[in-house]
Image (cartoon, rainbow over all chains, first blue to last red):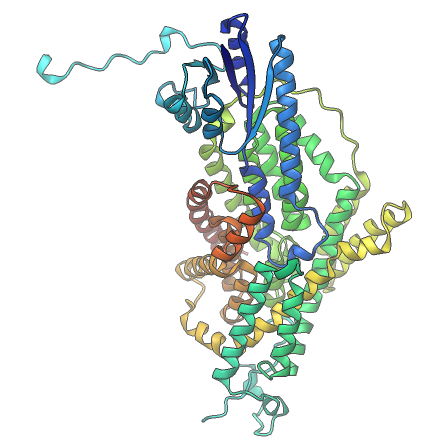
Length: 167
Length: 452
């Protein structure tokens, strides 16, 4: 069985811990990180918007950001592998995170991901658009973990009043 | 056909319409005589030249610098008489100090980077943030606003953005909100000083304001616009900012780039002193640039060639040529047409309308040509109108990716970066920020104009 963990900045330690706790001993573990293309493109666009600067002997900030993102992805995967403490495959992808994750999860036995939404107000928004997309389209079972300790039952909202005709 | 006499050359401090009344119009005026083309034809030719300059700057055939199309275009405008030699010279004389000022600021920013100022900025942001993404955003706002204001928006785009990205990544924070903050602030926070943006230098030259008065009038709009940006970005990226980053690696204390800091502070003080003494503040910028470049030369961290390259002569030639071509377009009819269209007066509604119009135009034809086109008619309505136009052309570009000239540019960028940025997200954020920031800044400007 192949277990794949989607690691995102800020929430990845919870995913690694979940793999340690729930992946079978003999499972092949893949740690996946997806680098977005938006940061380099944003930097590039900001320079492109400044008319007349192409002749300036400056390095394109988009290229610098792209290089830096590659390096930081490798650092994140190294830290995650160290935290996991067992054999694993590291996978770096570039593109739209949600689509890359679904593609990478093809044929896997389990996909582990962390909530990426607003977690101060529990409810639908605790899943951001990317995680929502992955949960909806995952081609395998999904293990969805809290980035921090799971909330207690006390956080449940009060039950709604019964509909008028049942009063 | 009636012979329309050309407008007189502008005075170096502003565009004063009505000035020509004091000068009798001589039927054999040498200026009128060298005008080989009649006005509609000249206007058509000027517009074609302007389109060629903009297309050349956007498409850059064979990767040639923008000046390669712009300089010949300006030459054609002068040779065909679309703009008289006198007017071209007046425009060059007006833009000369602006371009020199710009060159000095570019050199200063370059050598501040060589001195390690931007690396130190990264370390300061990381320390202040202490692993918390929301605090990092606050730090990015503070530093990007100051760097943009003092060392110009080019410095924020080219030098600070990669540093901010690296800081966020090293901290384990999601970089997108912080990179967005940099790119947005490079526009929004470029309101404060005449040196913050090339558009400001142009408006500064046209307005006839002193350096200190310009800053005094723009301080409130600057703060208001940044405040709106901060509130909107915090909410828009709440999800990304909520993701707690793992405890950061203990950051090594950065080496303080004392020389660069002292030089920059002295240059700022020099601006104020020069302005009080009635000296061109560009001289203070030149002194700052020479100090930083001189030190780099002595320490053998630079050669004369790198200093000249840092001043970007081809960019300066582009700005001058663009100015001449736009002047031809304005002189041959656009100026008087715009004077009828532009809202007149200095009331709040007029300022709001002007700023909105400038923002829209900046998104259609990019803010540099937009400000060149709008300044002459705005200058005749007074300082308030000039600064309102400036708010529009500086804040407006956050609305569309790459500040628009949309399709051409988009195509060119696509070649470089696959699919890149999420245009829907970019535009949604722009629609949330720009109207609010623009309105707040214009109201602040209106208030400042009444009080100061």
